[in-house]
Length: 417
Image (cartoon, rainbow, N blue to C red; front, side, top):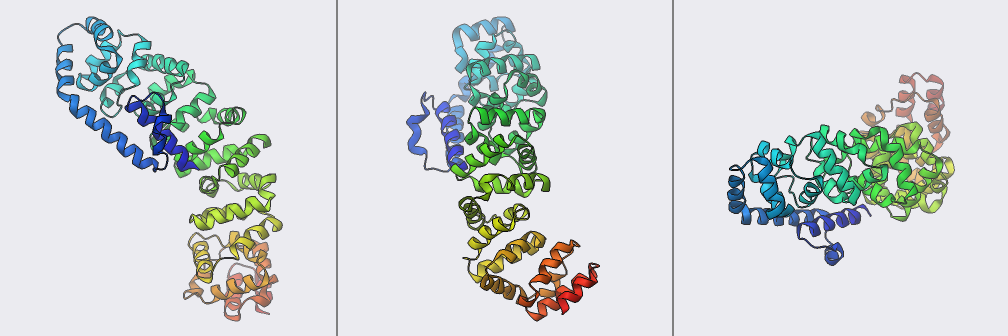
């Protein structure tokens, strides 16, 4: 799902570069990955810049010959916003800002539509915060979120702080949808941290979950898990709206990596929602984890499932081959997720549980593997003791020794008996 929406955003950006009023005319590109469309957009920008480079340099040189207010009048009357944007990177930054200071916010907003932030980066960093705020206010009034999203990654924090108060919570979501990369997305969400709950509520009210999920996919691991914690702290209606959208859009491959870094309290809140008690959703989530290499992202969530929920997960995992089960066990070992894996093992049908325990017993580094069982949660060890008759003898002896080292001699005795 998220790849589709990233592609839609990239098509809109390409349409802007090609001066194509309706992005729908480029719908034939929808089957391409977003990275391919972005690479083509960059190539088009490079071609345009190389073609006009000498002319822009001559115009930029001429701009030095007249006072800034007169240059601004000429720019507005003769050049127009498109040419002004093209010339911006060929003029001394201080001079460009001086000329811009005599132009109207409306004209400047028109110019930013075609401004290439990469080639005008130095000019952008010199723009006064008051000017940036005025232009942002005009772009927001027009609903030109695409332009704001392209520029947001290039303007200084001070300019963003001056501009963002003019945006409503839903405006911030729309801007985020058109951001260029993870760095820009993390930065924007950090600057508006106090407004994230409002953004989530506005997203639910306006039914804009597809854009929000696309933005979530763009964030770095730490930032998206922080957003996940905030989302889990919202009203149940908002959480249910998010989960329903993720399910309908088949975007569990976006949500599972978010859940992996969330707090236990937030994860527990998620697992209590009605959708995550339906066998269909739990089977889809597990299938996504298994087919998208997200098993270690699922396990933190699985640790908070009820026995009935765990059975749904276990039923899907039980269809995996021995080689796949072995790989899942190894991942749990690598990420120290034994406590999260055990409820799923307990929920297996007896043949699958025996199969998984046999595979674990046959691990070449079994002794080193068991030594990583550092939990002192009695429930963890009690659960192992409850299935001790199914555990192969060598494995049971190692588990008993580890329980003793963990300060649980009675459980060690039970495992040994």
